[in-house]
Length: 482
Ligand code: NAD
Image 1 (cartoon, protein in one colour):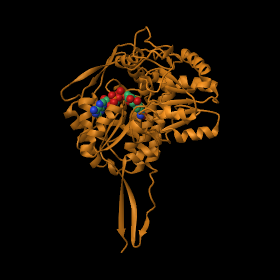
Image 2 (tube, protein in one colour; image 1 turned 135 degrees about the horizontal axis):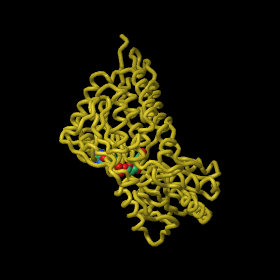
Image 3 (cartoon, rainbow, N blue to C red; image 1 turned 180 degrees about the vertical axis):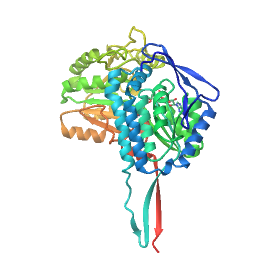
Image 4 (cartoon, helix red, strand yellow; image 1 turned 180 degrees about the horizontal axis):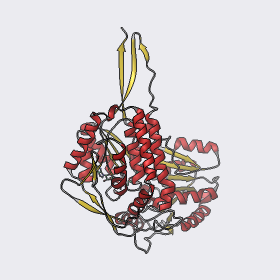
């Protein structure tokens, strides 16, 4: 399905596509062309109320007590439907989020279905403490119960995959949900995922609403019938939600930003390092919270490393999503383009633009692959997420200084260390204050292992059994045997 005409998106509430009560909508822009591709609903308080009421009714009227097998079977059907609708999802995600088509197929489509399949399996494999007599004459056991209707808020950089990471564990464990995609990339969620979910799950189990952080998102996450909020988004939004949730003591799960340090020691295999770093820093135009964006390189090998990184960055292919063999496409929006350009405009004099550093002179929000050398610890480009195809390079003098610099930011999501010294790699894995440490690699994910941060990168995990557990509450039942 090519997007030849403008799509008219609607909310999906209680199994039906509906317009917002007041009829509000806004245009969605293709970041590669600047053209309008869809009209997306702008939900208000009444739309949120209806979606939450549907989720509450579905929770109370049976979904919460379905068997693991039923939930698993339906999640497997969802995974199959994602693959069956793969062409359509590829069209929509490349038009809406600027994803190179082949990169989306290779790196996101199958992976999204695989992650849903993992959660389908996990639904049938929840474990707990052994039921037995911990007090004489009394049997104790654990019930794992769903939390209730949950609110799920997704970002614009991986719209489909982030939605899967949220709804997979929630549905596996018997929760119902209202999910709001980011306002700039609602298309794959509201057009296709919502329809598939309505076909696979009973009415009201999955509800999807369009709109902005305020009022749609803020009304949703503060709704009294919502029992848990899961956000993937910025630190500012995460803090706002955590504060708002305090009043009702809702459970909160926050996957926030990142600024991944990439520590390159002098004994690293440089030929293996620079290509991986360029590839994983620039993939998705650097709009990835785990992107290999902040290189810390031993001063002994700095010159050789920067020369090779420059060459690799300049070879990175970017362009319109329909072009072949692309590493990345445009930035997501005019706002994001302006934000990335702002970091370059504010560079201190000691930072050298090794390559790139500007918008590409073509239609769309394209930014050239960029390497910045001479970054210092207090620089804005070291401390803040740029979220564009920009790699910063900073030197360190010894191992301790490498860890000090790596940990000296507010983020704590992902990191990598490059060395051929096994003992040093193990020291780094302990020293790095990050939710993930890769050794001699960067960015691969597997469904069985958790993804989530420390510090201001948030708390709670996506993927793995740890994510599944986030969506359950644990009840101790103790019975007298008399
Ligand atoms: P954002 O916080 O502005 O928006 C994220 C989502 O939150 C959107 O759907 C938005 O509408 C919604 N939102 C905004 N204010 C809200 C409010 N008050 N109440 C409820 N919802 C609200 O972030 P963004 O700029 O769209 O996304 C990029 C950010 O997400 C980056 O910082 C990036 O690092 C982070 N991110 C993190 C991960 C991860 O796994 N840790 C993955 C992808 C993106």
